[in-house]
Image (cartoon, rainbow, N blue to C red; front, side):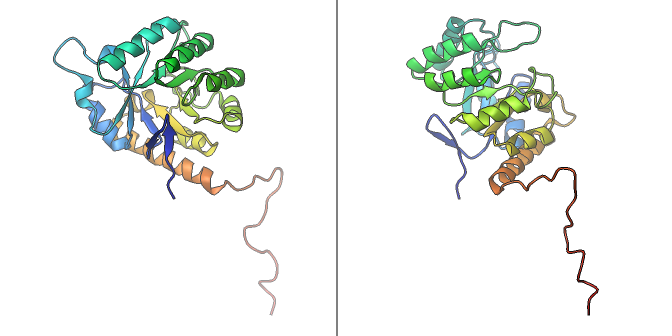
Length: 255
């Protein structure tokens, strides 16, 4: 049976979204292929770095661009960045990032909601990066977001599922794809998130800071697939305070 990720009417076989912000241009293509990803984020400032190099030339054919509004501090700035990204050919997808906090880099949920409302009205397919708050997530649904992207831990920290319980609430209550973004540091953490019922994982720092970035991308691919299959299969029950034999303990010595 087909098990595709649907975002704004577009179908994806891969549930691994690659963040490209910390990779050299030469590594972007290799990592995307090793990870089997079909969507790669793109900061507008990297679309042309002032010379002949252009990140668009390093992204494999068939991969959907997800430009982000990195650097925006207000909804209006996010809108302006998204318009520029579309104007240079990045398409209609946009990952909304509105961050005013320079120390912890936590998203401003209020400005993110405003930006989502504005961008949806202009025909963008909006994936907002947000702190996992149920009320804000419900408002993002009402605003027309195509998914919500709660953080697992602060950007670049590799601390893992620090907000696990809040993400689970979103999985249980929000009728949109839930894409965990920021903080995932290991393939095992990506697998755990997928087992919770999360729809996709976005990773960047965990791969970019690995000893072998290509192999780490491949490891994330396998972990995300394993977690998804485990979730769909239905995880076994958990017994508290006791054990249960996996084989009968009586009868096997009887005549």
